[in-house]
Image 1 (cartoon, rainbow, N blue to C red):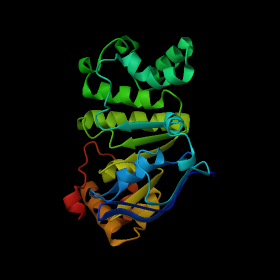
Image 2 (image 1 turned 180 degrees about the horizontal axis):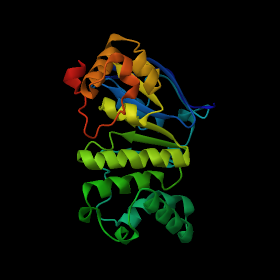
Image 3 (image 1 turned 180 degrees about the vertical axis):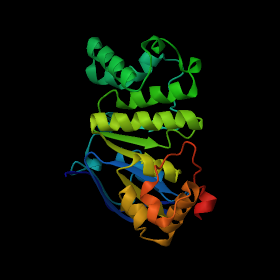
Image 4 (image 1 turned 120 degrees about the horizontal axis):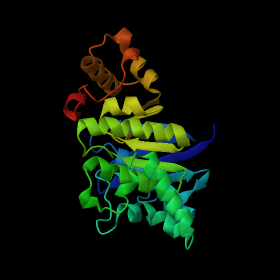
Length: 272
């Protein structure tokens, strides 16, 4: 498969604190990569480097083989969807206007094409068409998050970045959104990078799981490989916690459904 995103010997520091050190990673096109680790491990920093919101102190970030430092940053971001916790919608815009924001920039005067994009993505994320004229304050938390996902996908990007997008919703809604997102991923084949602090969510959604600690990669593997063959003591603690909350012996780890609904999850304190 083709490498779509590559980090080459990336370093990033904030003052005296180095959050990424000699960070090297290749992500293939069409992967759903969930990123997990303790607070301050560099997972959000790595995510924001992909669309140029942060720049490395050393090293390169490549998208489709091109160093993003040489690309028009506005154009780069229009081709990469970005969704964060709480959705952060424009409060003075309706649902339709929020979703149409980037397509309007791309389609210019082709309003029909933009309307079709809005209709398509509202349907895909499970939003009733009657909601298109409502404002964010008139929506539930789950509806707001769906609008945020639709907005991030409305320009049909090749890559979707998500930074703990479901952290602000209740557990039932969170489970529904996880299922919707997985369905969208399978339907579109888009490459997804998804930051989470929830090991159950990481295992449930990802085709690959990236475990980070102290600015370094602890393991990058499929959920099954991670569960059966943890590479470091840090990953082993994650796996042991997952085994305990799912009440499974080690030889039955593959039977875990990775669901965060009705199943407890490891807190950062427990991971540590």
